[in-house]
Each structure stands twice: as C-alpha cells, then as structure tokens.
Length: 218
Ligand SMILES: [Zn+2]
Image (cartoon, rainbow, N blue to C red; front, side):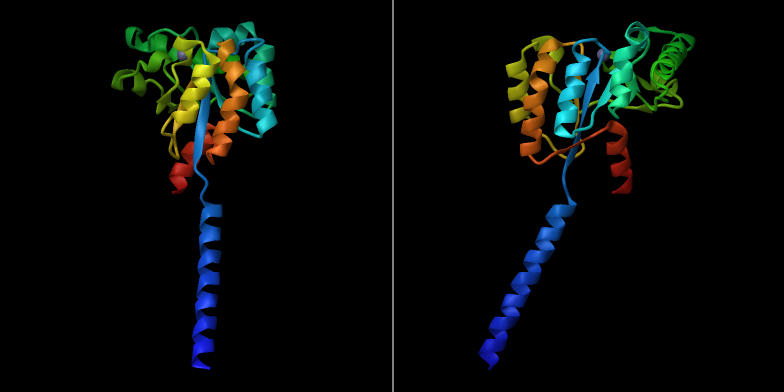
C-alpha cells in the first residue's frame, strides 16, 4: 500500500511540475521591436507593411517630416495598418550641429506633418544617425528618446540575403530594438523571411512603445 501511495504521489508531483513548467513557458515570450527609419518611401514602405500584416507582427516606423509631407498617403497606410509612427526629425540633419531652436523645430514640424497626414500623435523620437548628447536629449522634451540595440547595417549593405542571414545569426534577446530602413528596396525584399526567422526563434514582434511599457511592468 505504501509503495502504491509513493508511486501515486510521484506521479502527481511529476504532473504538477509539468503543469507549472507549461504555464511558465507560455507566460514568457521574448519580444523584440523592429524599427524602420527614414521613410515613408512609396513602393517600399507599403511592401514592408503588407509583410508585417501577413505575419501578424507589429513594428515602428521612424519617419522624416519632409518625406511625410511628400508622401502622406504612404504615412497614412502605415497608420491605418495599426503600426507606430516615430519622429525622426524633419530633414535628417546631425542634431549635434544645430541650435536649440532648430532642434525644437525639427521635432515639432515632423510631429505636425505626421498629425496632418495620419491624425496620429507621435510619442517616440529617434535622432538621425544616433547623433545625440545630453544637450540634444534635453530638447526632446515631450518625446520618448528611442535608440537601438541591434544595427543590421541594411543601409550600407543593400543586400536582402545578407540582411536575412544577419537576423538568422544575431544573438538577439528579449527587449532588443532592431534598426532597419524602409527606404531600401532590399530591406523590403528580406522582410518576409526575417519575420519567419524571428517567429521560429520564438520572438514576439511589438512596437517600441509596447516594449517600453513591458519593461516598466517588469
Ligand atoms: Zn535615419
């Protein structure tokens, strides 16, 4: 009787351990944020949007104000697909070389252009080329400054296969922000496969604001 009881207890214990393990793995799914800079670029941005929609993935597009004014319909396509739009200044200058008034104008003109084209209020902002220092950062008042943790160098390589291989091999972790550019047709060529790879690697794809909100919750 004792033996049967012990076996039964062991079985119960195993079952409950399996249950706990299953619950834990289901609860934690690492997330990364894909970001596409320098658009909107007609004919390229839309292809990226369509691939994201096919995969049920989210992303953030850091747009340049003068591009939004030139291509409002492309900016609108991004907004209507439910993706986040970030502020990437009006004409992509090195902000370290600008005055305080000029930097403020770079940001406010872009936020106004996005609002006009899409109706969306922009919260996230990213300095062109990552050129930021304490002085510049202080002038990003009212915006969440967003950098990146993984640079795919897609702007330099302009090679879909190279970009895909980079994502396949990159040592990615939960919370990573991946930099790409939606002005590069080769990046649009690679996006479908990149999304498949990231899904296979177990990552959930979220916007930068969602990623920040999750970090705050943790
Ligand atoms: Zn840029």
